[in-house]
Image (tube, rainbow, N blue to C red):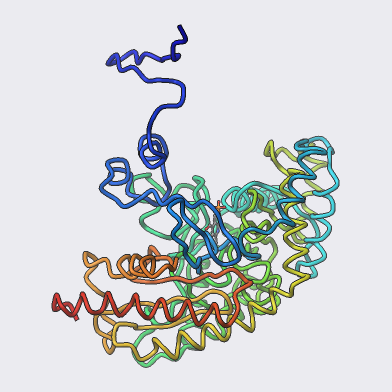
Length: 483
Ligand SMILES: Cc1ncc(COP(=O)(O)O)c(C=O)c1O
């Protein structure tokens, strides 16, 4: 008789069947899968609503396994620029996986899609960009960029120029280094982070942090002055780089205040400090252009990209490296020999093939221009519906990034009691309306990062569903005398 293979637990003698067992997918998930940014206990016990098992997607819409359809106004996690269900990318993946699913890039090995993608990125990127190193995630690409900065200063004979300045509420990923760079307290707590020579400076959020009577321009200058003072206090000879998202994402979707990048760039230039522009959210059209430097006055020395590079179809990231850093890497070869930084999957051929097909769509369908134009329409509609809403303190955004910040008292900008979980409740109410919009971790903030294929009709639908969701939560809060 056939018997299921079993594994006995040494400790308590529990018998675990090794083959498939008769559980629902939901139950299997709760028993086995750890989810990021999820209350692990509530999820595992079933006290939380999840898992929400997404089965298919088309255009801006995804469908769960029970057939419920959602407009995804966050493009997954800011990823799916070209929309769901694009067979062009699937075909490119299939073709490349059939021909050569994998080879490494160590010791000068290469493959055609990775070569063509590196060449294409260099040509798309700002003029001073000259080389590309591929990774698998935004986090590892940020790690790579930090290592490149450290290597650069070693080659230049000043290894003590090593500190990295990031920003409070910035988000740069989940590895030890990238989460240390991040300035979101919940990412540090419980892990003993941040680690390393990392400092944080002001969040450039005018609505939240301006002083009484301070203009936006003055506020931006104060942020830059604070950065300048931090560099002076630490000693410019010890500060290597500043890392920032051109428009802050996960920290609350915060466009830079007027004049911010001019002033910050001036400070960095004055102290010979490199700029790492983390464009993992912003690149490939989300701001209405290929790269942030096309629309904002910043001059990065290194750029980090991921997400929209493949529209999330397969994991791929890239560190795009400016000529000045490259020259040091070249000199480093004389001193240190082969460049001793590698990932098994760097320059992965299947991922590169997916990226090429994805960029063909972004370019061929003019999605950056659509992001600019439809994005402007979306911002205008959000403003028209929510700017005067008593529960909405600020409507903000740029192109295909937008946010609503909810407040208990609009005049005084008083936040809601954290325990009310207003941002989470609005996000949940959006779900009930068939809309995915994200409760951001930095407060009662509802974020939008739609696929770049969004039309004005889609934008109207997103705004209308959001309006209904906000009204439902407002009615509940009114009933409970919270507003
Ligand atoms: C600006 C920014 N940097 C880095 C990351 C980390 O990317 P990944 O999750 O692919 O490691 C993210 C992810 O959301 C991000 O938004």
